[in-house]
Image 1 (cartoon, rainbow, N blue to C red):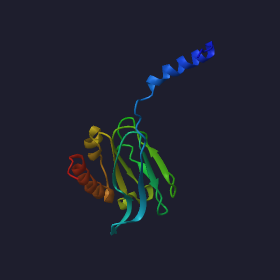
Image 2: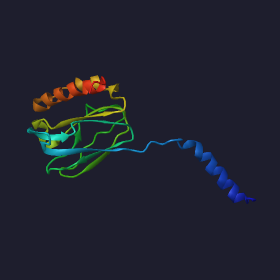
Image 3: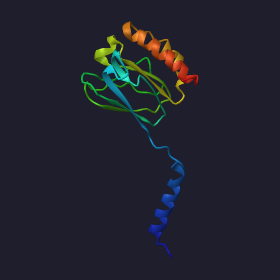
Image 4: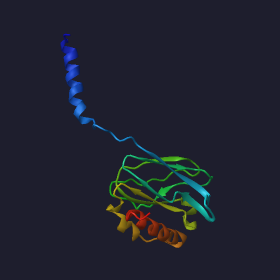
Length: 161
């Protein structure tokens, strides 16, 4: 089969692009975090993200689901890895957060932060900023809740959970 000049140039252009496409591109994973008035396994825990700690990989999407009304998700500006952008979702609306930067992310529900409605994302090598995030000053019930979450995250990162 013979090619004309235009077909040959099109073939060369496609061949030049092929090496730029990864041999095995990893499909993104969507992780769901529910924003709830009551913890599904402990009625004594009010105003929670479920799960409260989530592990993901760069390129994944974290879907915050407004299972109960009047919740949102907002990043602590001081609890983000380098390269991650601050986010603040709308109250009562689902929100998709693509994560690219490896590290530990701390977040809260704006209206229920004082109730201790906080969570952690551990993305890829979460240790890149983990210790720095642990030392960020926290207040009230958010401080107590983060102490519990970091105790659990310590086990996860040590491979004990």
